[in-house]
Image (cartoon, rainbow, N blue to C red; front, side, top):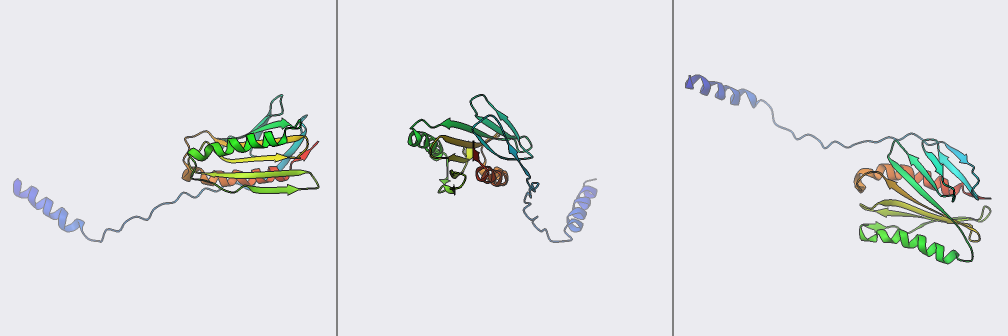
Amino acid sequence: MKFFILLMLLNFVVYSCNSDVLPKPKPYLKLQYPESNYFKINSTCPYSFDVSEFANINFKDNCWATIEYPELKATIHITYREVNSNLNEILREVEKLTYEHTIKADAISNALPYENYDKKVFAKLYNVEGNVASNIQFMATDSVKNVLAGSLYFYTKPNYDSILPAIKYIEKDLIHLVESIEWK
């Protein structure tokens, strides 16, 4: 019986080594998101803008809003502030909230500026890299009466490498949102 088991093991060793073992290539996840179409959001608030058809928007009484991306488990929280001779103070507060992420952030890129003198929209978009709570933040103003600020949040533990494709997808929507702002 021992001879038979030894013969079987030898047989497995001889016949199992027919080819070279090759390492498997690393698989990469390829995420493809649909092309966004936008529609104008009109409300009783003193502003309007375009939102992706893949998002749901909800307004609160104080003209704050949430833009939810249910498929991506992400939300953009938008705050509205009316300016009462305190524009610099409001802008400093918004910028302070952005830079509070420096504790966890790998980098905060220079603000991407946007200026449209005809529509009186002046904005900055911040990309916060790293495992932080909010990877994109923006602020927009007419520099006289209105300030909008927004932050992107995902309903998951921050893992920048994993959510980067979703961040880039929503970033395009945020850029379009800022470019479509109109003050009433």
